[in-house]
Amino acid sequence: MEELKIRRGEKAIYDIVLNDSYESFQLRLVELGINHSKVCIVCDSNTAGLFLKAVRDIFMSVPGIGSVVTFEFPAGESQKTLKNVERLYTVLIENHFERTDYLVALGGGVVGDLTGYAAATYLRGIRFIQLPTTLLSDVDSSIGGKTGVDFMSYKNMVGAFHQPSLVFINTDVLSSLPGRQFASGMAEVIKHSLIADPDYFSFLKDNVSSIKSLSSAHIEKTIYKSLLIKGRVVEEDPEEKGLRRLLNFGHTIGHAIEKLSDFVLFHGECVSIGIMGASFISMKRGYISESDLNAINDLLSSYDLPVKVPEIRKNLDPETVLRATKSDKKMAKGRINFVLLRSVGEGFVDSTVTDDEMLSAIDFCLN
Ligand SMILES: NC(=O)c1ccc[n+]([C@@H]2O[C@H](COP(=O)([O-])OP(=O)(O)OC[C@H]3O[C@@H](n4cnc5c(N)ncnc54)[C@H](O)[C@@H]3O)[C@@H](O)[C@H]2O)c1
Ligand SMILES: [Zn+2]
Image (cartoon, rainbow, N blue to C red; front, side, top):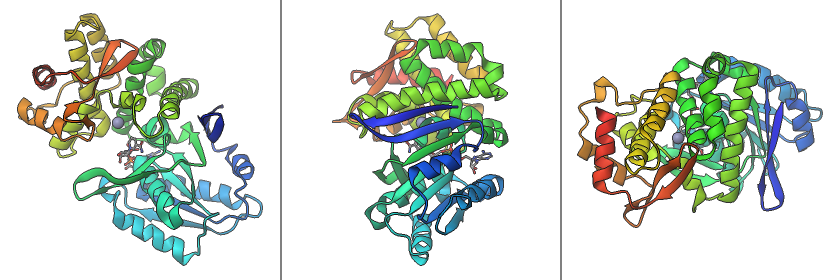
């Protein structure tokens, strides 16, 4: 079991607990002082069948707990909507939820983002607990306090910063996660290693089969290392004014491809391709070597991630992808804040990347 605290200045604002079961979860709830509160567990149609009963039983076993209600919505990104937030508000109002009560997000990033947004806005903010169940939500979406929903065709258009009271990660639940979803989370993991920690990159390279087969020690170490990196970045820059932009490594080209592929490709798959594009520019500028670029290519591939735009989307034209990168939110005064690698394990933000450099990187991702 591992544990870390996310701080704001000197003050600890929440704990992240990492375990291979829900065994110590009840104790954590007691320590949090959740007894006498009401709880609404939010899940999607997949996590409901898989984990809801076990998690509900744990809440019910907390001495003095108020009522435990549940809210379920169909799985999928298309469900991360204000409509579902409204349905959730309705459940909370009908059950007389007050400021001292809790929402619990039991699921991946979709459940976490939607639940967090409802918690940020219901009664101007109530508390919530993250129980992430995908690798992506373990290492990325459940920490940092970004919450939100999609609006019209815009991803994460409506949202708020709202910190959880507790994040409890149970690595055992990953055993039911489909392989493509696991790989998608690995793209963010590999991103963390590339921007911040060369030893972590080597660890991921040396332990591919143990990590993919979910060896408890290896998966725990992987998630922990990623949490340390993301945790440190969000502590220093909670509202994405500077350092946090590093986490966008691979996301400028990645997001453009994601949008243009009509979401046929998963987010992490597009990030993987975007990582190759950003690494290509880093190589062309002489920061990393060609053998570094090959090592990054091989690591992504070994976790079953695409390194080029797949055949079905090869008809994308580089100019169209370039235009899509410019409609991305990550622009500052017309310039793209692009994250490059100074070396394997060190990222930095650069706003001098030219259209020609972008086009050659996009071309590299397409061919
Ligand atoms: N808030 C943030 O900082 C942040 C960061 C990154 C991503 N996100 C958001 O996260 C979302 C993506 O998250 P995701 O990849 O977890 O997607 P997701 O929540 O849609 O989960 C992926 C699929 O796996 C299923 N699932 C979840 N846990 C499972 C398990 N243990 N076993 C079997 N199936 C399981 C889900 O029902 C879903 O079908 C996006 O909406 C993205 O915008 C947010
Ligand atoms: Zn991402």
